[in-house]
Image 1 (cartoon, chains in turn red, brown):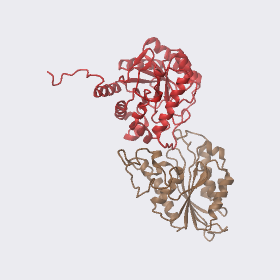
Image 2 (cartoon, helix red, strand yellow):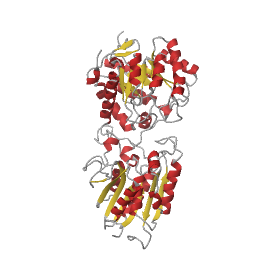
Image 3 (cartoon, one colour):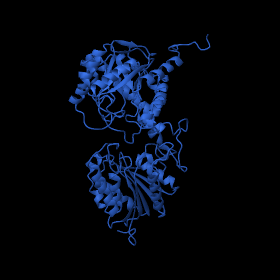
Length: 297
Length: 255
């Protein structure tokens, strides 16, 4: 078991019963159990539609499903009990249907994380920068993984307001490293810890672009890097594109991020992301083309 | 000592006032135009000194050469390398050249407005602490007004950032009432009303302008100045107010 906290090469990432070397680029499919998330709100609010979405994304090559019950943006309060009601039975249902699929619970609350892990979740995806310090203890208790993210110190479900950083990447690096070390201290297996710069969270578009541009600095920490780019505002602002026209921008950012060392990609469009990542893997020489006969006959 | 405020201008302080920060498309041209116009009127008074007042972490003055550090808000554009933003209408704005970094946003944006107007005369950059109570703010205003020099005040401050569901601070139902109270006070020249603003409520509503407005109130005590509002809107859920205030005819410079 390695502790990459001091920086160095990327090692094995363990999720559930599986282990992934640094060459494996993983697709995490978003499955929102919410009526009001920003992208296609409510599309998987119905449990049947949500399970259908899981079937589809598994078929498209998702390695992980990320199940969330609270939108990131501000809105009506979602109590702990309601968040549990939204995601825990669904985690259990997905676990029943897919014994080996890696299930991630998108939550910042340890009470919810505990129930989700008990129902079969393998990973706790905390987008809000360790706001709840007890998440690590839950991950340790269940042998689950933990995503350590940077939200610029914002409380959950708040928007950035005139945020400024002397060096945003340095702030991301320090924050996520400290959270990863806190998780190790809480007993989380180091090979199950990821870091996430959390594009758009506590960041304006310039900050998210800078984080992307310098993603290699985060990969150099040795911790596996997860990026959540999908259809986000920094893509929309960069391209002046409304929500339904951000896929190409998302995929471009995905490819650059993969090239710079990101290993897990949290997305809405699984098939397109899989293609983009397979292309990057082939360009890097990590995987051969599916078929190569051109000019070879 | 007689007060010597020749005129005062009120502008908001969102980073998006700075053309370099907002990308290729013009953003809120009408707000930028209103700010340019009100600063132009202020400078038209031919003051001995322009005092820029804006909220900051703590009360204090900044070197007149201080400018906003854009790299903190927009890494990648200050270096002038790849990814450089195209300034639309920046007109030679000096950015991050000289002066120590870290000047508060509002003060730095005030300095930028003066630069954009081509002002090269004496300037005094004054931050007022975001938690400074009303009395201290008013006292600071009186001191700034009592310097003996013919002074133009450029007051940088914003209303609530919680006016709509899409506002930076989401919707707070108290925001509308708070902001309309400020607007009413400015329109009526009733600056004493600004001294009554609830400090805790202003903080809850993310109304960063509160201490700067109270400095203004201290600098322009009775009689009520003549005022003109050039812009009052909340295009992104934050209350922006641009106004021009000047002592009434025959009363300038005395109290």
